[in-house]
Length: 371
Ligand code: SF4
Image (cartoon, rainbow, N blue to C red; front, side, top):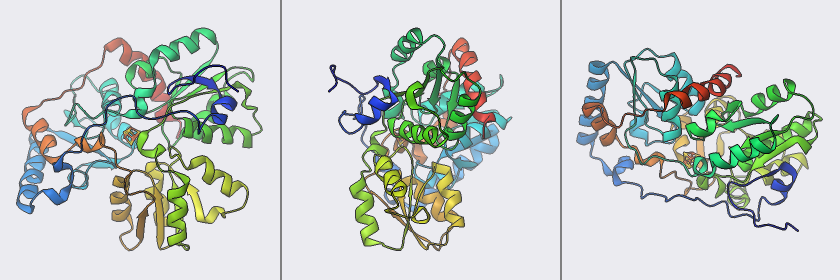
């Protein structure tokens, strides 16, 4: 049906991209590292943990440092952090902070946001420089530039999971928590025929496309990139079905980057599953949702690290990962030991080119304003 081979990272009209969703290999184009032993709290003795957490607390005070940890990093890092949250929340906390050091156990694209937004006296530290992202790797800046050349009046909305070069080419950034709002804002503030490119996550793009349709907006102006996160993409409909069979009374909450998103949305749309039993939320939105819902059991379709802040929020509820294999090896490059060393030796400073930072701040600041 399609006269060319479509690869991960290609940009297609939304209707074609959605049609090809299950036919394109969206696997990672970069190596997936081994998860180090130190990323599993079970491999650290109580004495070691007390030492490392005590030293991190001491260094935070000594260096006037703020530790910003993503929900997917190991639990013992989350427990010693000043803020734990998703990419949007940590970008906000970093932008609001006057601390001298912003140490962020997360991944490079998030560290780059802090480096672009930081005040002149601040340093941004990453515990490990190998913390990359398979989704960000799909977003090839040359493909974005080529699309812009073909569509000079087009608008680019890039998901936060992109590197600084792509953000610098974008009109808006968004995170999973505000993707819908950013898209609606862009629709309201553009001409009806203006093309819009949403990148790089195809599943989140599908979610955005459904939102456009619900608002009566034709999909003809929307373009999507064939990108995916290998962790979320591998959470397939069969994983969710199996857990729902085992736990029939449980609420299911799905991150829109998941490979099960389109099937789950279809089930809700067709009335196969009531909306009260199947919901879609961002990483941080899941933590908020679990406090509000009546169900005592919740099936969680996202990276399993997010179960830690969810459990802390409501310890009496039972959380069931849709897939226990949904582990991000990039996020797990962060360990207590390398966070300690980075703060102790002030190493792994993240810097970005000042001109790229200037251009990237425009879409990032829009993302932080549209909440
Ligand atoms: S979970 Fe996926 S999107 Fe998030 S950092 Fe890991 S590879 Fe990237």
